[in-house]
Image (cartoon, rainbow, N blue to C red; front, side):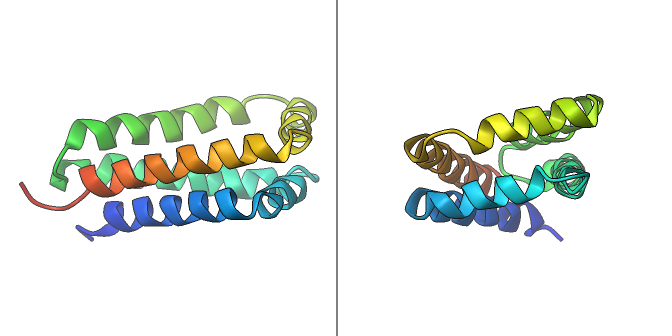
Length: 125
């Protein structure tokens, strides 16, 4: 379990690199999640991700970074889910209609964030 934070960071970094290389993949994924209430499945995964970071932060190299990212991930998603389904779908549609170069920037940012989580989430110290 001590490596869970590092593994989550690696998954984020891989997802960011995939988005950087294949932005249409992420665009299609966002389009799929914006249909109906499917969004809540992704939101539940993101809340679980944030809670896992909060739970395992104490065993990490730099716990305050992991705590901050976990709080922002879980808290922000909970607040976002408080919106009506129509507003959530409007935001998702807005994200879906962004140009591909912006997806590449988001992918690069996700790769950097995943690397930061990997660095700060190494067990020990």
